[in-house]
Amino acid sequence: MDDEKSTTENWSSTLSEDERELVIENSTLVTFKKNETIIKQGYMADNILYLEKGLVKLSVDDKIRSTVFKIVADDTFVGLMCSFVKRTVDFSAVAINPSTIRLIDRDIFEGLIRNNGEFAVSVVCRMSAMTNKIVHDLIYLSHKHADGAICTILMELSFIFKSNSFQMPFTRIELADTVGYSKESVITCLSSLQRENIIKASGKNIEIIDPKRLEIIARNG
Image (cartoon, rainbow, N blue to C red; front, side):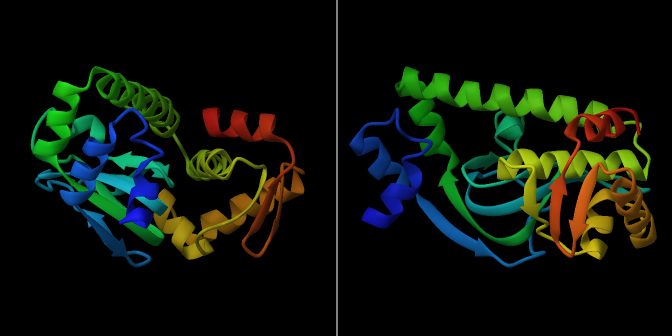
């Protein structure tokens, strides 16, 4: 019980001890393997999903392609923005690496929002921050070619890992699948970025040398 309690305190600091216990008693921890589907587009949102540990990509599928619009890491609600609009989720979520999700009973969560104003404000703030980030990412991605999409993903990973140096959580083929372009396009783009001294890449290790130029390509690519 103590271990479970510590994992929820990073988002539930505005809850009382009894309310935290209520969340734990009415939630389930589920571990997903790498590349396992967490949510399929059209999923009935009976639970609130909270990513305790791992890395997850969110995508929207249409008849032509699957577009990844967000990568989320530890301490993030998955799908919270649309959980109160309707019962279905309009995107898919797939684990990039082994990920642990807490499934929180929706009715319990809604009750906490109604009865705890401070918690309600914290939830709204989280939703607002996530919406703002996704809107900016979607604007970037709406007109992307391969170079722009890959640079956007590199910027996103740098933001998640809070560093310009990080290890890619996926292979070149998996990166190609994430951005929706061929492996050859990914390799060509990464090679070009290295020649231009924008990044250094060695295996899965990435170092962003010139973040300003990377952002320009992400915005205009």
